[in-house]
Structure formats: structure tokens, C-alpha cells
Length: 309
View (tube, helix red, strand yellow):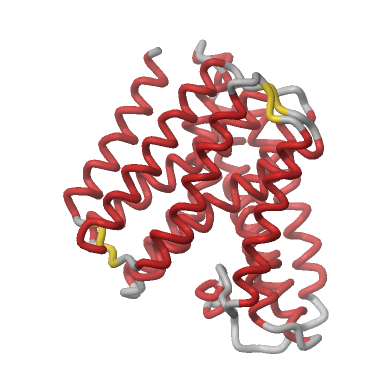
């Protein structure tokens, strides 16, 4: 048990470090070849920051652990909007805007509702995965035409230097790191679930989801310390949409996922969570401290209910 917990945290480090290596090295290499920062943000940064969730989800799917595969994406999104967003709002109220609510927020809500409705068929198939990927592609094209990038704040954190020869090795190392980390996380999570006598779905929607979301938590805390709270909401909502449309969509294209009754219940919680967040975003155009505290409380209650059920 202790060894599997150690493996789990080692997996978190590998996933986080690997994603950072991919984003930094690939972005510097792209800059060297005069690729615009808009394109870098829409492609490299978007993929790099979603790589941990993607590798864990795909690894679990192809090893027959469908519960971990789907629960990782669902749990990560609930964790992002519940614990991380709530904690950031408790530290300092988060300002919002019409575009964030009526464009990005409603798009995420529609995506969640579509997945919930499809779950009643018992399977998220390849055709549905293609639909999610097509939605993501249209969204990226739309952002490109508007000259917006979902990863522009990450680009500001890139070192001010030209790409070096070793950046190619860092890029390769990043992919190796997330591949090993994804395999380790699925293995350790399955073993921990067996040892605790709980379902792999519960472990996936709680511990694994929190593990793959830790990079977002640390990044948001760093942004809060720097006084960049206005960027946090867009990043969290954008990350959730990428997890569903990109990570889940591509996974379903590669291997259809079965949906259990347990999974459907968590999807209902997620739809409710996204709806509540949209209400908070719209009322007063900010997420207040008490609203953040409520989101954190809901997330903790959900965790407790999952483990006790």
C-alpha cells in the first residue's frame, strides 16, 4: 500500500514535469521557426497542459480500466471548478466578464449536458468522440479568427531565450515522462482501490483526478500570489472544455468507453456544478469569497460521499 502511494506521487511529479517540459521546449522551438504565439497557444500549450489527463485516460482505456479512464476526466473537471476555483475565490474574489460567461461558460455547459445525455445510451462511442473533437476544432478556429489564445498567460512564463539544441531532448523527455507517469498512476490507483476495498471509479474520480489536477492548482496559486486572478477563471473553464472535447473526445475516437450508473451520477453532479458556477459568474460579474467557500464545501462533501458509498 505504502509503495503504491509512493508510485502515485512519483506519477504526479512525472506528469507535471513532463507537461512543463513539453510546453516550454516545444514553444521555444516553435518560436525559433517563426510560429506565431497564437498558434503556439492554440496547439502546443493546449496539448501540453492537457497531456497528463490525456495519457492517464488513454492508458486506462487501453488497459481495460474504463472506470478510471472516464472518472479521471469527470473528476478533474469537478475538482477544477469546485476545489481550485473555490479556493482561489476564497483568497481573492475573481472578476468575470460577458465573454467568459456567454461564450466559454455556456459552451462548457453544453458539452457537459451532451455527455450526460449520451451516457444514458451506456456508451460514449467513436461517432460521439468525433463530434467532441469537431467541436474543439471549431472552437480553436473561432479563437484564431478572433486573435485569441487560451494559453497566452502560459506563454508569458516562457524564458526569454532562443531555443537550444537540448530543447529537443527536453521535448522527448517530456513525452517519456508523461507516458511513464500515466502508466504508473493507473497501476498505483488500481492497487490502492483494491487495498481500500473501494471501486476504481471512486479512486479515479477523487484521488487520480486530484493528482492530474495538481499542476493547475499550483499554477493558480502562483498566479494568485502575482495578482493575476483575472486570468484564473478563463484558464480553469478552458481547461475543463479541453478535457472533455479534446481528451475525452480523442479517447473515445481511439476506444469507445462504457458508462456505468456510478459514472452517470458523477456526470449529473458535474452538470449541476457547472450550472452553479455560471450563476456565480453572472451575479455581480465576480465570484465572491462565500461563493468560493460553497464550491469547496460541495467538492469536499462529494469526496466524502464517494468514499462512504
